[in-house]
Amino acid sequence: MSCPKNLPNVLTVIRAVLVPVFMVLVIFPHFPETPTRLVGAALFGLISLTDMLDGNLARKYNIVSDFGKFLDPLADKLLVLGAMLSLVIFNGMNKGDFIFAAVCTFATFVVLLRELAVTSLRLLAKNADGKVIAANMAGKIKTVSQIIFVIAAMVEPLLVGFYPVNVLFITYISLAVMVYMTIYSGIKYFMIYVPMIKN
Image 1 (cartoon, one colour):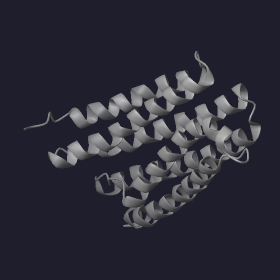
Image 2: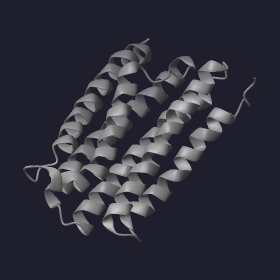
Image 3: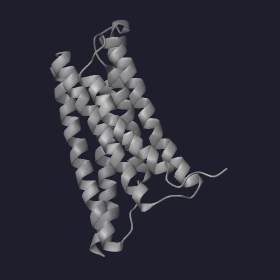
């Protein structure tokens, strides 16, 4: 069974297009908090699955392209940054949780800084040797940690009533792991790209 050559890239484009849909749902909730959080988490999870699907299709049918290598991580960046920005606005403005909004704002800045730096290095490296390097394992783990954080931040507040204390354990732990992996994977990319640019 064959696979259309442009299907992985089409899935990537769909992922990028659905990001504003998620943001509108979360930032401008038309439903009560519980369904907004559940539907938002489900939509975000569904969008994230397209990331795994397009990459698997591209590798399985050997239709990996430089366009896909560049577009796929770009769509990931749009998804994660859009989701984190939505969480900052939703929790800060709609829920009045300014502590979480402040911490999430800092994490969003770290993610944005890392993505801008790595994307710049990728472009410089491509200009140096004409090749686009796909995401490495640290980058993939970073993306997974970001997805886990967003889903936890969407769903865990609904479970606080069952906790002995009013603390979002999973959300803050996953946020810390995400920030660590974001910085760590950024350093790994620097170690890969800088020698290529120098050469």
